Every structure is written in structure tokens, then in C-alpha cells.
Length: 403
Ligand SMILES: Nc1ncnc2c1ncn2[C@@H]1O[C@H](COP(=O)(O)OP(=O)(O)OP(=O)(O)O)[C@@H](O)[C@H]1O
Ligand SMILES: O=C(CO)[C@H](O)[C@H](O)COP(=O)(O)O
Image (cartoon, rainbow, N blue to C red; front, side, top):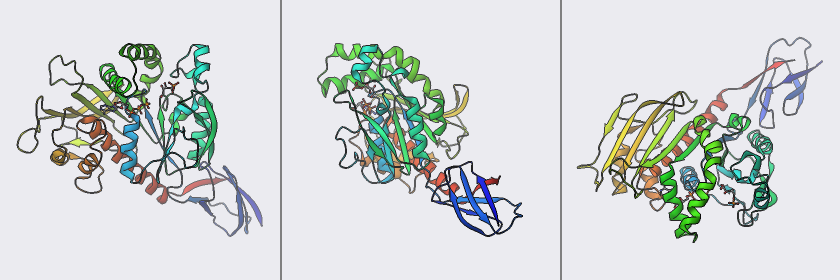
């Protein structure tokens, strides 16, 4: 009888089992080490550890400035998985967390280390890394990914204070959304997929006015001042994260109306990195070609200024990407099926699923243009990525070497 110790490179937990070349008795384990008794002193073969599929949480990062459509995107994403996303039951009514059957969305504002008063005293904005606790963010995202529940702080947007923590249990998919999901290298390494919503200054301004003036009663001057005050830190700490994103949704003013300054018609670009594991970019007509397409006519109703799609290869921060672009807006969402039928690699489960999702949420902001269309497509790609990761884990036992 020999005592054997196996050190694992991946966390070993109750979903894992060990098969050894000889009979073993009662393995005991912790996160990195499995100890068992073997009936033979000579066991030179490898021990194999198998963990059940899908138990490790898939982590998605969604970065954008405040008021740039993160919540709308999250609603589209959770809808792709079915079921509604709700705040934790019986918890803090000001919690920023949203939980559905498959996904848990946490807001990284909860890792502000300085509350509103603290930031004011120190003269830093919430975008400044000094106002955020990246060590705790890393530790907690890693723990959740490894299947361990955490006590996450809550930043209360109503009071501007840090509230007592809430428990976050490991979900199938954890989405970390906010200002800095790709800022800290350690947190970035934990992401299975990352998205950046890149809203141009002109469009951001138009959306802010729409929301903060119409819905929150702010003055035009105060909105302008708040955007200006955030801009240096946005440029320094938030915007550079887009170079790390696997997919970027870029929102710009239209090029279909010369010198447009209304900001209502949008040109939206979906920039998709090549060579990302479990993610194959969507394409129009023919993969890798350069295409320009005006779909308006018999099958798609378009009013002024029309709709133009473009697709092709490009480089983005020195990396190979495919870019799908839509300029203009849809008149009739039910006709979107015509556009959908010319797109490939959509990761839909049935013909027309993109159109169905868009029709289901026709009242969400951006449903008549490329923002809604590309957010929906990215949602479907995330579902596909999750399913592929789960399937690959089911097939591949975790190999461990014997000490
Ligand atoms: N695709 C879009 N088209 C037009 N307006 C949009 C779009 N997405 C968002 N908006 C506008 O921006 C506002 C903010 O959107 P949303 O709440 O999704 O952003 P957010 O990034 O979650 O904001 P915050 O971080 O401040 O909570 C919406 O109320 C709407 O006015
Ligand atoms: O950029 C933000 C992220 O949503 C907020 O401004 C930040 O979280 C600070 O919150 P508040 O403005 O409520 O003090």
C-alpha cells in the first residue's frame, strides 16, 4: 500500500473524479492536491482527473462608459438564454446584480474602493483605477470561476455609499460589466470572451441628453460639464481596453447623410477578432471577401437615407479582424429576415432566430439599427461559445502528473 499525491493544474472539486492505474481508496482533495492510497507501490502510469462538464463558470467581460448601452445589451443577452434576469431575491433593493437561470451579471461599480464622498475628497473620478479595488475584483472573479461563492461588496448608486456585501454563487455564465473589466491583466486573463461598446463622442452626447435630460431632469450644461469632466480619465483608463476585446461594437454618426449633426441615424461596426478559441466571426455572403451591399428594394423597405452593409477583413490594434458594418435604419423589423438570410456563422439554433429576437425586443433602444442587430448577434455567439466550452470540458479529462 502506497500513499500517492497528485498535484493538479486545474481546481479539483466535488464534480471531479480520479482514475488511477491501480486500485485506490478514498481520495481526499483540496483545490490543488489529491491524496489517495494505492494498492500497488509501482504505479508509474499517469493518473487522470475528470471534472464534469460545464461546472466551471464561463466568464464574459463587457466594457463601456456609463450610459453607453450596457444594460440594454445585457437584457438582449440574457433573453437569448431564456428567462428573465432579476436582482437577488430578498437582498438589498439597490443591488446592481442581475440573476437569471444561466447568467449572473455583476456590475464592476461594486468594486469602487472609494465612495462618492471619498472620491470627492481625493479629487478622483470613478474611472480612475485609484478609486477601484482590482485585487478584490481579481480574487472574487477567480473564486467564482473556480466554483466558490463570494461575498461581493455593493456600491449603492442611490446613496453613493458602499453597502454590506451580498453572496454571489457561481453561475454557468458570469458577466462582469462596467468601466474596467479588461483593465487589470489578472482579471483580463480570467475572461473567456470580452466585448467593448465603443460609442463615439457625438453619439454618446446625443444618448446622454436623451436619457439625462428627458428622463432624469438634468440641464444641458450639466450634461456637457459631466462629459467633459470624465473625458481625460475615459481616454486614459477606459478607451484603451478596446484593444483587448474579442468583439467591439463601434457606434458612429451616419455617412449616408452629408454633415449629419442630428445623430439619429447610426453607422455601426462589429469588429470581430480572428483566431479566438470557440468564436468564429459572422460574415456577409462570402467569408474573407470585401463586400458592399445595399439591400433596399423589393425585399427590404427603406426610407431616406437608406441602408448600407459592408463586410471585409481589416486590422485593429495590429490584430487581424473581420468587420461587419451597417449604416442606416430598418423601417420594418419583420423584413430583417431578408438581411439575416445573407449572413452566415450566426450561431442560431433555427432559421430566423436573429429576426425573432429583434422582434421580441422591438421596444429596446437601437432595435431599428445596427446596435440592436449586432448586440443580438454577439448574444448568440456567446451562447455558442458557452456551449462549445461546456462540450470541450466534457470530452477532455484534466491530466495531472504524479508527484
Ligand atoms: N442602441 C441605442 N440606441 C439609442 N439609444 C441608446 C442605445 N443604447 C442606449 N441608448 C440610450 O442610452 C441610455 C443608457 O442605456 P443603458 O442603460 O443601456 O446604458 P448603461 O451603459 O447601462 O448605463 P449606466 O452605466 O449609466 O447604467 C438609454 O436610456 C438610451 O437613452
Ligand atoms: O461611471 C460610473 C459607472 O456607472 C458611475 O459614475 C460611477 O459608478 C459612480 O457612481 P455615481 O455617479 O452614482 O457616484
